[in-house]
Image (cartoon, rainbow, N blue to C red; front, side, top):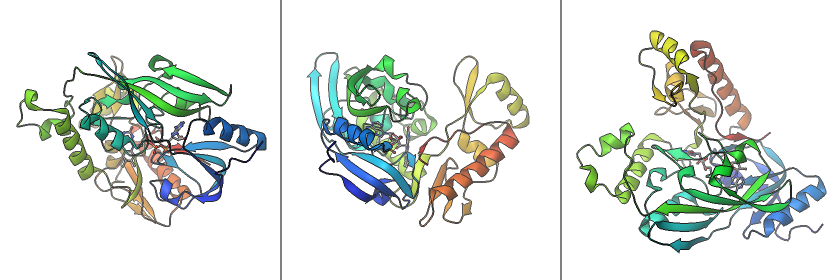
Length: 342
Ligand SMILES: Cc1cc2nc3c(=O)[nH]c(=O)nc-3n(C[C@H](O)[C@H](O)[C@H](O)COP(=O)(O)OP(=O)(O)OC[C@H]3O[C@@H](n4cnc5c(N)ncnc54)[C@H](O)[C@@H]3O)c2cc1C
């Protein structure tokens, strides 16, 4: 098996993980066309090397040494497949920056993705945890995903219903290293309605009539709100929410409400509710705390931060302390949201 021609030995991922950890990939290979994916996977398998895919590194916790072959998703094409009365269909390569893509759709007059503005990372990673914000999830717009199946060594097309999308989850997340996504085809219907039910958006638009609100206005609102609340990874290392919002039974919620009447919860189904993990962490007194190079953001307790010269081990130790405190006080398990590599 030939060495991929663009193989990069001992490649620094310092600029390619938003936590800003010093990370050295044993080998990396930039992927600029889909045909390089089977080549890279075949090479890794032939050499008995582990492999992993990296987009923008905004939802991963990486160790100091990342062994095996890291595929760097750099494919960068957006194409209009069709545009008819119902809507527009777009084919977008995995390496396109997500926020750039959202801006591109709006610049071309296609609304729908505006609530997902300013989420860091790549288009190819968006289905992995079914990215979501302000009441919208990417699954609502995915027609199909084209991926290389590393088990069968075949290209596959997974339609929306095949992707098993749910809250911060998908078939891709539960089968790590099976699929390498090359392309996503999105359907954006021309019929558009503003989605501003989230409290922050409601107050932003408090003085506006709903009919006057356009997709670009929501894009601007979301960017403004996010910039005020979340630390910019270029300034303070972070991966956004470090924990998923836990889902508990309504009876568990009722018990918690007796003791904590101000607990923040959202209806998830007729039997379950989602709790705001940030509120739980805040109540345990972690907001704004610093432990060496890592800490908890002072404006949003759900965001763990790294301020330089720290490591994944320190961050994960802090996460464990937080999980223990939340479990002890509320009887709730916090699940780590980013993908942790050993
Ligand atoms: C400040 C900040 C705010 C954030 N806000 C949100 C938010 O509001 N909502 C939200 O859902 N997320 C949010 N995130 C998390 C993150 O931006 C998303 O999960 C994003 O989709 C990750 O993209 P990425 O390219 O950086 O993925 P990476 O971190 O590079 O990878 C994440 C996982 O996806 C896999 N992967 C990446 N690309 C591919 C591919 N082409 N094929 C197969 N597997 C792949 C990787 O192997 C890894 O397991 C936030 C992060 C930050 C730093």
